[in-house]
Length: 74
Image (cartoon, rainbow, N blue to C red; front, side, top):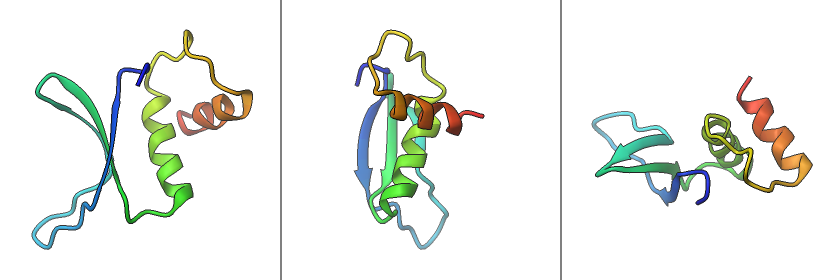
């Protein structure tokens, strides 16, 4: 991904601890892990919140997508 994040979907269910969707550093990579059990809007919110932290000035985004990402960063 041009924003510097790699996106992966997975089942984050764990009986021993609570695991939430979000970004992390893994072996020098910025990885965004999204729980595949989330609904489409919650997945979009998770991704937009992380993208709001990235420099997206050089990335083309449709105006509606850019507005949604910016709204998640507020």
